[in-house]
Image (cartoon, rainbow, N blue to C red; front, top):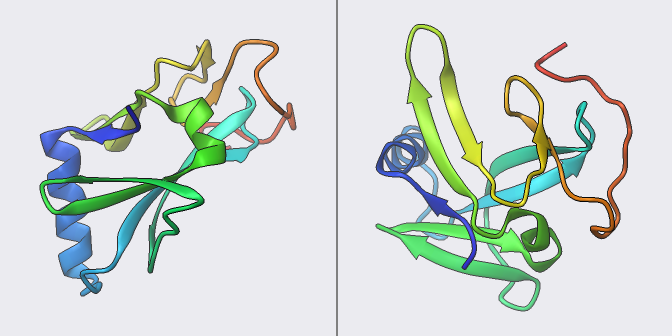
Length: 127
């Protein structure tokens, strides 16, 4: 399955790729970091390349998406949306693997017994 982007998220990613004049080989890397108030934090970044052995690669409307095989167990089925309103602006993750999330949605936790979840007690919601 992997990770997918909504039309709004695709539009924003394409805008950022163009605005930053990034080469066609650039991939959108979707990853997780240990931290946040719920155990993991989402990470989005542009990467120069992806490794077909280490990453699961997909493409949506010309946007190449890479997720490491290690992270996919926590992200499989995730849909990334983009909100742009007076109250909220940014990417929003709808992750079916998450059993708990923080109030702002930037941190999530998975069920007990899931591989290597670290509770670091880092900051959440930008605090």
